[in-house]
Length: 358
Ligand code: SF4
Image 1 (tube, helix red, strand yellow):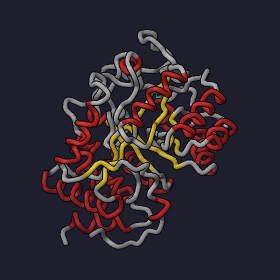
Image 2 (image 1 turned 90 degrees about the horizontal axis):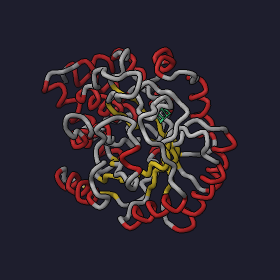
Image 3 (image 1 turned 120 degrees about the vertical axis):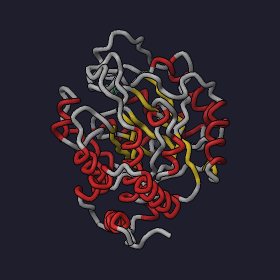
């Protein structure tokens, strides 16, 4: 067994891997080393998730936001974008589009909109649940325990609240007036309420170190999250990080691969951000650990206005084109589109066997 294989085995088998091991793997750039890491991750993905590629249809229903995240084009200081809130009817029509394409998860996403009324979203959830056989993921930021409970009781299944970075100092510098411990409290509350809970990070943030990414991966393992979204940093011209260097696609892919190896049975998307660099890296993501794609079902004219970063993939495609694109990716990889709800795999695979993947 080579030295690299020994480290990969150690990282895979450890109840909590060493940050130094992960850092070392993240620093490798030789082609054969990368291939060994990606191939190991792909085997873990096959062993724990199978060959299905799950689909999550995303609807971005409001781009209002009260936050000032340094990397995001929706930050409240950006006066250059036109803000919108979709009506309930517009949103439900988009859900119908998604249902017609046999997609069984809708992700309802918005900026952290202070005027998002909890009862309005509760009604939307109730209507979706009564009209469609569909899992609902919410991604609307930090809210009160009361709101989280209201939506869970109405039928919401999952909640996505990315940590973006587990490095508290870096988190504070990127999120003015936000509190890292509050973020952690929200995650605890969501888990306590029984949501399938998602986290994730951004790769290539100014000030981020390989050690910090290694610690993100350990954070994901400790948190036992049901889904983890990893995307490269893409600077937005109307954010405080305008003009900074983009995240490195290879480092992003290595983070996907190591997150798969360490967390094993988590749903990991080949994120839209991974598809929005100088070329589309989602296929590579699917080859090194990812098992989910997230087609965009936000209708026009709203879709163009949800610009968290520039050059976002799939903004120009007609909604139906996603079928061709996702099917094409699955076929090219010898895999298939999974049209089930694809709920958390943690429920049936919480036991960690310690055995190497076949
Ligand atoms: S990342 Fe989310 S919370 Fe932060 S500014 Fe963008 S939309 Fe708002």
